[in-house]
Image 1 (cartoon, helix red, strand yellow):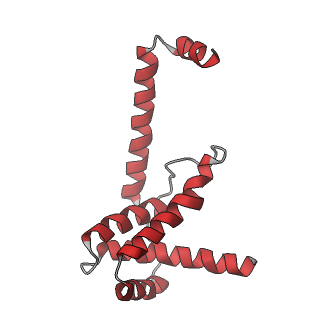
Image 2 (cartoon, one colour):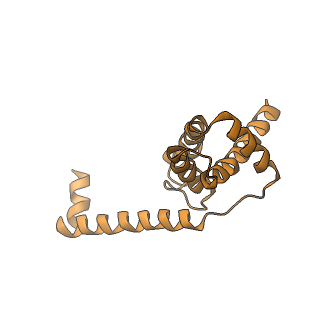
Amino acid sequence: MINALRRWAKALKRDIIALWLGARDRRTPVLAKIVAGCVAAYALSPIDLIPDFIPVLGYLDDLLLVPLGIWVAIRLIPPALMAELRESASAQARPASPTAAVIVVGLWLLAAVLVGVLIRRSGGMAQMVALFRS
């Protein structure tokens, strides 16, 4: 069972790199490029949309969203092209995605600003704490 999990994890890593290559390949359909690019950028980003330290939810993206995104992206890419991309991915090093990291950090900053605005509009932090306690 451990060997099967290792093979699955290795295949996932290869497929992420293949999707990254597919997002840049001119033969990939437009919708597949968009989905593959988003999935690869998110998977390769050093920052998670939901941080892993949040109980249960932190690992949901790693256990469900990333594999689901990979599955959808692979279905959108023609099989012959995907086979070629997988072959190329086996020889490639792991790419980095600083753009995805910037996007995720931007989303977190936007969420923090929105929470700050909501706290300010509601009358301050003491008011918010009182609302949650009741």
